[in-house]
Amino acid sequence: MRRLSIDFAPFSVQRELHRAHPAARWLALAALLLCALAGVRVHKLFLHLDSLDREAEHLAVNAARVGLRSTPVTSAPIDAKQGEAVNAAVARLNLPWSYILDTLEVATPEQVSLLSVTPESSSAQLKIEAQSVSAEGMIGYIKALEQQPSISRVYLIKHERIHDGFTDVIRFQIQAQWRRAGS
Image 1: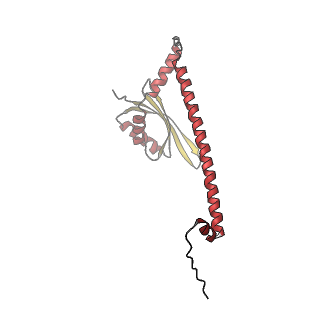
Image 2: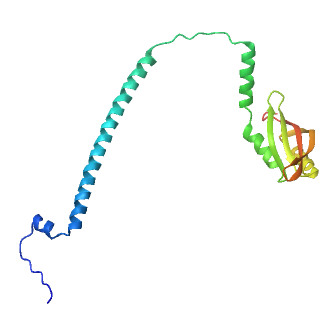
């Protein structure tokens, strides 16, 4: 005979709890505990956040107080050597780097690898160190640099054949004059 569930009793939480499977009751209890722990953790984090806000306000007040104090500025003369060094550094930083590097990138063929580019801002010269797998690549690079409108007077300063790992390469140095934007 089949079991027939006839239940005409009114709804109550106690009856539903009694009818639920024990595993479901344990899961509900575990979920309730996890929610309580999460609430405690969130409360602690909010307290910590409030203390950090108070500390930030305190630091802002102290910074404002320190900012109000005036410190005397001494006007010491700058040494000539130091002034020249600062001016040289500023001149080097004010170079048209993106323009120079774009020009070199356009002129550089695939078989040539640039190793270093050293500008001399006072004389508007570039010292380029590169390497190529062949002499034709080196000469082609020099000719390609001469074709660039912003570069003139390209000279091969030094070249040497070096065994670089698996193959022989030609490492060379070039000196080139670049034209400044105004000239």
